[in-house]
Image (cartoon, rainbow, N blue to C red; front, side, top):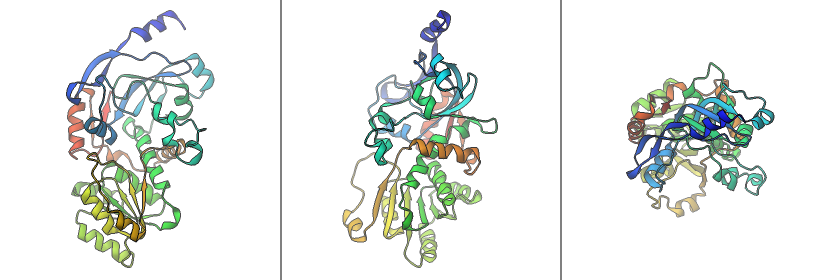
Amino acid sequence: MPEKQQAREITEMMKAAVIETGKKLGVQNIQAPSLPKDGAIIRVTGCGICGSDLDKLQHRTLAEGTVLGHEVVGVIETLSEGAKVHSPQYAEGQRVSVAHHIPCQQCYYCTHGSPSMCRAFKQSNITPGGFCEYIAISKEHLAHTVFPLPDDISDPVGSCIEPLSCCIRAVDRIPKEIGNVAFMIGLGFIGLLSSQYLKHQDYTVFGIDLKPDRVDLAQTHAMVTSGSTDQGQILDELFQKTEGRGADLVFLSIVNPATIALALKAVRDGGTLLLFTSYGKGEPLINQNELYFREINLITSYSPSLVHLQKAYDLIMHHHITVAPLISRIVSLNELNDAIQDYQHGEALKVFVSL
């Protein structure tokens, strides 16, 4: 590698939003990552804020200097010589979307349907995180989690490939024989992505949210079959549709005591609850006796496989999933703290940080 290029990689500084004292994010100049062997450097043009970023800030212990963000879009800045050989489909200057975790595809978890439990999956990541100007990605990222973006796919839309893939895997974990009536609790970003994929899979989808604007958005774009802010009204519609049984599937994009209680009202005997999010307080939420005597199945899901990343990419490329109306705010790196607060309080549906 030429000495000038190597020197640039080692000495260049970049702006990044890093964890500071008190779990606040501050924009600092930090060392830019060096070019990995057989990997690449991506110049980040934007990164979506994910609910897991909020969970980490609120409920996890994070080292000062940590850079969050994983819904990345950018431009390939530098390809290693090895990458040019192993991944000839990519070129410097090319726009791409990048996902962060890579399963090994060989271990017990990968070969038994649990790739997100793979130890390599959990340990792999982009370097540092997406809320900065440059990231380093490995040979394995280039092979499996980098996707080219055509001109008609904007950066904010391209950043949604990874979260959509999480939704697709969650739905694909549902047994096919349970039926095709779903009840979506929470019509935020994840709820609306998942509702669209459920409809794409021929489900009838009833949805509820406390915010009228989210219900209106869902119905305007036909992301749900029927939506409401009124629990009694939507349950009445659901029971009329199903001859009093209730939903075959209840998808919880919000988990708390109130939504669990609603889910148990809505789900049919022998139906399925799908929990797509964590509950940071760690308190018991479900009466196990009700699950037992009603034979209610409980499924959880939180991260995608490589197959589901490809599915998400294909659906977005072919415009089968509507994403653009869900991007409610585009902010700069300096506005990240305020945007996270708005996202946390439900004042923004989806926030994209533009660099």
